[in-house]
Image (cartoon, rainbow, N blue to C red; front, side, top):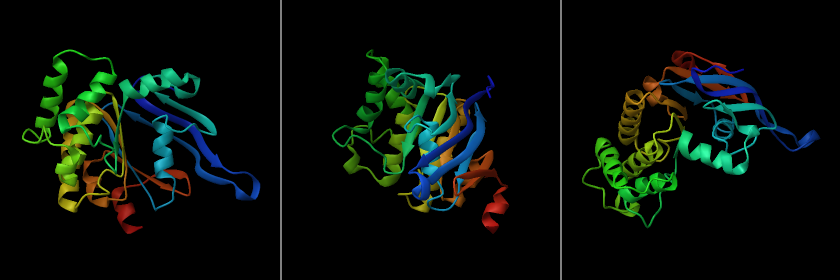
Length: 236
């Protein structure tokens, strides 16, 4: 399974914990692909395996079987160092808990990711500032996370995910710690930026209010994946 138009492919991927009577199939024989510029939501009940699936897609977990391919590279064939480089350059992560560095300002949090990718020139300051300004944080560049609202922290996290211009963005419950207004605003900005830059985006969420930004909605239940229309989800 490989298509040059797809930035992410999962081919018969499973993740199994335990053995025998204690075996749990957190992800069970899942296959799907996402192309450049496409936004896909993965929805489903709590405990259905959504976060595990996203972690497999991002190379944070190793599948028990099957193959994950990102930007043409099969993750299972990469060394640990090569996998780390791929995550840094090819994938941007957005987490529910923001995961910002508490001692760094908003701009420094974004610039750090650029520095880790090997950029040391003056364009780092310029580009990190422009990203944050684009996300409405031009007046909050020098504020540390403790001085930012939840919505502002998540905007910094989105800017950080985009910092190295990766083709793939993976977001795990990005509105989970936000009120409904902030959640809608952040997701609207993220989808707008992703489409402008032709990014593929996979969002794991419980939040049906952001379904309007998606090209596709995938439903995960008991580790199994199916494609459903938005109205099907609302009726479930």
